[in-house]
Image (cartoon, rainbow, N blue to C red; front, side):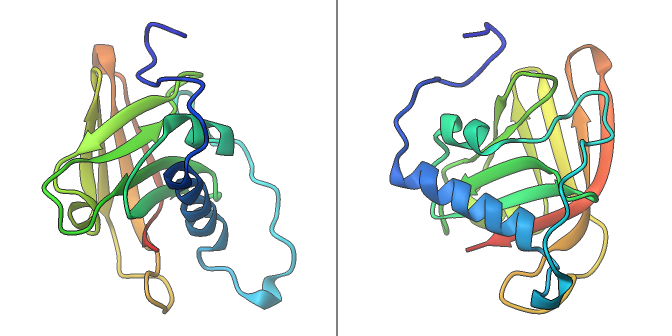
Length: 169
C-alpha cells in the first residue's frame, strides 16, 4: 500500500460498499439520460492533469458507509468524487477522490444532509469544495445540479472542474 493512501485495501465487499457502487453508478450514469437517448457513449478521460476517474473497484475498496450518497461527475460524465453519509447525522460523511493514481479518503461534517447544497471535504493535505452553480437539471426526486469542484492539494496545487453534483437514493 502506498504511504500516501488513506484506504485500507482488500476490504470485503459489504452491503454498504455495494450500495455505494450502485448509487454512484446510478448518479453518474443516468443523470439527465432519457430512454430515447440510445446507448450511453463511452466516457472520455477527464481533461485534467491531476484528477482521475473513479472506477467501481476504487469505490469498492474505499468501504464508504452511509444511507445515501452524493457524487460529482465531470461535464463529460466521468465520476470524480463519491461520498456517503447518514441522514440527520452529526457524524461526518466520507468520500473519495483520485488525484493521480492514489485514491484518497475525504470527509465533511454533518452527514448526508450537509452535502445537499454542496460541501467542503478535507483529507490529508487536501481540500475539495463543491459549489453549486445553477438550478436542478430536469425533474424527479433528486435531479443533478450544475456544480464546480475545486481541488486544493499539497504544495498549492489547485484544479477546478465543471460538472454535476447529484445527491439522493
